[in-house]
Image (cartoon, rainbow, N blue to C red; front, side, top):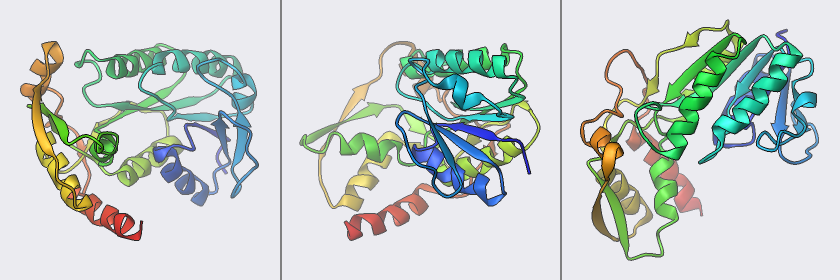
Length: 258
């Protein structure tokens, strides 16, 4: 059996997909959660908060590998720094981190924090593996859901994405977590490049809703990167198989059931 694995963000979208894969291999898994939870399905839960720096020492005690999935719109760099301090003191042997494609190119809080966390991990002295993944298929649906009360939805002009299925990212992360430290591995992207307008239009059609779409120009450096396709990874990436249409077909069942 492998050494104990600590998963941060284990109750999130990606974590819920990764945990069963790790448990299926017989791995001894612990999850860092913001709230107290009973053990579930052989998974141990430990309460702690990465941003506040609380409960982390207990969470990393006796751990051989950390799969660091916890993240938010901001603060990834702070949370990662707190985790690394505790992991170094505990003698953790491997940390696996999920980042985002084009992390160093886009001057936005989320991307900057992801890139800062990448650098901190690489410089920590702990053997490491970092996987950058493109946005998940549910990125645009979640965005649209927050704006459905409006009759007009903004569309970021010139923005194209390579959406990837969360299950494929989870499978790759499980593989990396159970393997040896590998440094920066090839990015994982979806099998197609799709514009924001098409993604929004398709999702609205799935919901059976109509909204006016207003193109909004992305200003500054971020706009230049997107319009040039700098956020897209065309060389050297691993490419998933599940398409946007596959995701919509799965989601259609959930919408009809609801």
